Length: 198
Image (cartoon, rainbow, N blue to C red; front, side):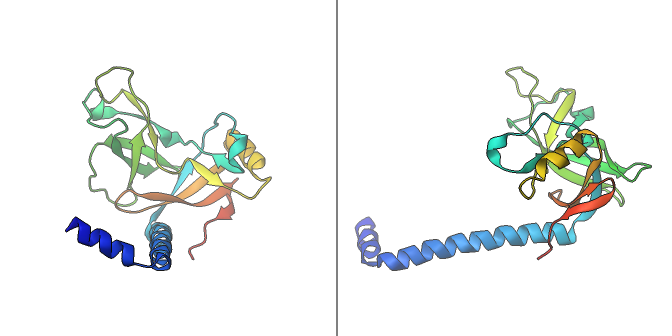
């Protein structure tokens, strides 16, 4: 059986194999773009306040490193509970405050139903308590996949300065599954960059 498969494989022209490899890569690219389009088109918009961060890595090009008020959340009922993963997935329930900015209300190990205007955003805990046993700390550092945004060359410094002065906010689109993507950047409440919906 293995010999017959190997013989069949050797009979396929290299150009056909190359074409199939290119086609598979193109399909994967299209699926990635379609997934992002779905988030941007169908997701609930939430506005998040950014927080100051350390300077960026100049070797990675022009991008803005982002951290949010919701990046550090109290573990609540999860505190001290064991986790089987190194960077466990959590779901943070967000609700708008009086300023219209979304803030963390609670954090959960599993998705739970929420009612509008609340949303549930999915993230990964990125810090440990320092013990050998994997448990949730009292305070969690959560990453949502919204921690960097590429901008045109030369624009990163201006936006980082605005971020450090807490004048930069982002509008994220969040699907009911908790997946999120940055939809637009706001500088003093005015949109400066917006993701195309394709």
